[in-house]
Length: 64
Image 1 (tube, one colour):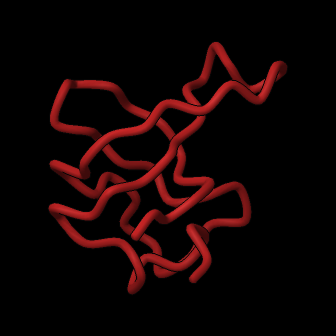
Image 2 (cartoon, helix red, strand yellow; image 1 turned 180 degrees about the vertical axis):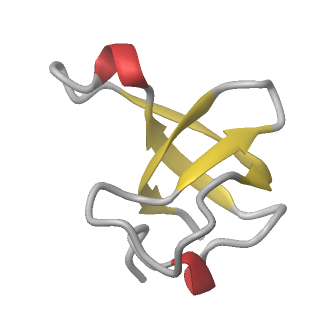
């Protein structure tokens, strides 16, 4: 599943996101989706979400 399609992202899903300040390094942060912030159905750089710990970033990986 791609993190670029909004239909794949739901609240409670475990994901890895890249935060704005980490885009150059590609450092990923793991967490559980609390809110989906992107309104469009897809985004080429990943759907923007807020994790339960308050981190905001774009989804790069969906974990099982």
